[in-house]
Image 1: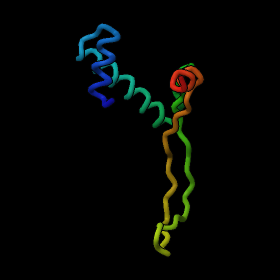
Image 2: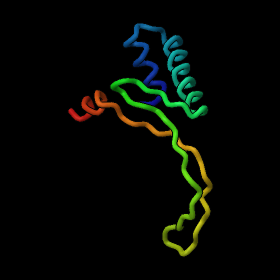
Image 3: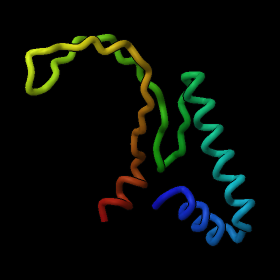
Length: 91
């Protein structure tokens, strides 16, 4: 499912116009992004938690060669699945 299909599904489930559903979806995604930029976490009980993690700089080997490259330190987004979502998917 891509973003457009997701917006259509939200509009149908919530009884909203596609324009209103797009605005709501965009607002949710923007809010989650802003929180992660601030290194805050966003939790939805039963669904999961969005958070960030710092990755240290490291030296990586290029597969199939003897070359190595330096990978800089970075911050990555993480998602931990909640119990209700895990159980629903496992059925």
